[in-house]
Amino acid sequence: MAAADRSPLREGPPPSDLADRDELRFREQIEAYPDPPRDVVRFIESKELPRRLEYAFAEAGIEPHGVVVELGAGTCWLAATIARLPRVERVIAIEFSRRRLELLGPVALAHLGAPAEKVERVVADFYNHGLGSEVADMVFIDSAFHHAADPVALAGAAFELLKPGGLFVLLREPTLSLLRRRRRAHGAEDEHGSFEREYLASGYLRYLRAAGFEASKHRASGGWRTRRGRLTMRPPLKWLSGVLFSEYTYVGRTPLAS
Image (cartoon, rainbow, N blue to C red; front, side):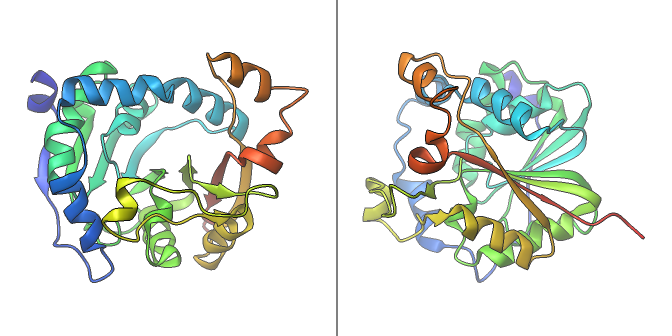
């Protein structure tokens, strides 16, 4: 696949002690992507990911630029989408599952029309990425922060990566709400480990602040094609995001240099 040829792939440091071996085993051996060209595209399109991302960025006032790192990159759909933006110089996609980076990442890059040469794929644990300090203008994580056994340590790893004034952005994190205070079932993931967690919005903000970030949350529900989405995720029913669906973008900002 041309995208795989143009997107560098390299091995990073070995997993840290905090890396979840059960999750790594699940991603490498069990996770169901029997037909990557079909299944990755279905995942991206069924969840309307690019459209939802555009909405979330607009609501939070986020304009990706410079050097971007994605932690827990998975299928690389987010890295691919961000790499298309003209102000983004390059994206480094960190993922501890080589299978995901090798088999799934190139499909997402090709499907989304990303400039694959701008996306470097690195097999590494998101606590121990090996990239050094103050190398990124922005760090993103998509629906993976809640997998961290030590969320403050993960937020600290992102903080170290960022230049002064840089942003750490958490997207699509499962959030408990006023009307839904119990964790949802996560199917096959629950059968093979305990890496699926959920927190209140206040919990995500607390973890970011504990790592030194100035933290805020922004509504992320919107941009849907479906009739349900159009009805419930815009005024006058947009308030449901907070009391029922709790779909937020969490943003941490590092202090500016003195």
